[in-house]
Amino acid sequence: MTTLNTLDKPVSKTAAINVSAISKTFKSRNGEDVVALADTDFKLNPGEFVSIVGPSGCGKSTVMRIIAGLIEPTKGAVFLNGAVIDGPSESVGIAFQRPVLLPWLTVARNIALPAELAGKMPKNKIEERVNSLLEMIKLPGSGSRYPSELSGGMQQRVSIARALMAEPAVLLMDEPFGALDALTREHMHDELLAIWSQNRSTVVFITHDITEAVYLSDRVLVMAAKPGRVIADININLPRPRRADLRGDPEFARMSAAIRELIPH
Image (tube, rainbow, N blue to C red):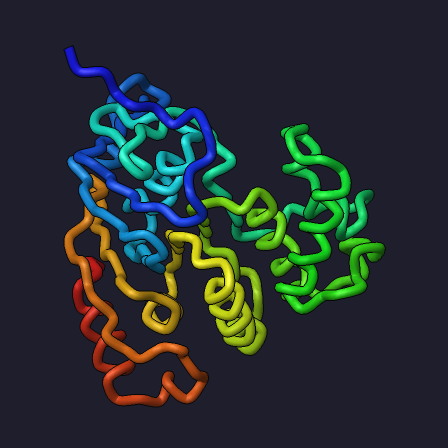
C-alpha cells in the first residue's frame, strides 16, 4: 500500500507544484453532476510565475482553490515539493480580487493577522516582519493608517503583503487587479514584479486579461470550459526585468494575439 506524504509543515521559501490529473465534480441544485475540471495536469518549477487564462466558467478559480487546499479534488492530487496538499497551509498565501482588509484594524494589524491567528511567531518577530513588508510594498510608515485612508492600489499592496506574511513558498492570486482602473493596474504589475523579484515565491496568477498574463509571466496556461482543462502551455520568452515599453514590442503583441486565438469563444 502506498502512503502519501501529506503537507503538515511549512516548506522552503520556494516550491515546485505538481497538479496531477485532478478532476472536480460538483452537484447542481437538481442533484446532477457538474464536471468543473477533468484530468487537469501541469507542473510549476520553483520560483516560477505562471498565469492561467481562459473563458468564464473554465475552472480557473477552482484550480486555485484546490492548490490552496480550500477544496479537495474529486480525483487526482496536487503536490507541493512532493507532499500532497490536503488542506490549507501557511506555505501557501492567497490574494483575492478585492483586498478584503478589516476596516477596524490598522494596516500593520491587517498584515500581521495571519501570524497572530496562527500564534507561532513571537510578537517582536511579527513587528519586524510587518515593517519589512511595508518597506517591500513601498508603504513605510503607513502601519498606523487604516484601510479607508488608502487608495485602491495601496489596499491591494497591503493585501499582497498580508499574503506574504508567513513567507509562503507559493503565492496564489485570483484576479487581484481586476477591480482597478487600467493605469493603476499597469502600475501594480510593476509593483508586483518588484515584490516577486525580492520574494521569489512560486506564483499562480488567475486573470482574464491576456496582456496582463503575458507581461507578468514566465508561462501562460490556457484553459477551456465544459469540462475545465488545460489546452495549452505557452512559454513567454520575453526578457526580464519587464519594463512598461515592452507592451509596445511586436513580440509582446504577437504572443498576446496567439494566446487570444487559443481561447475558445
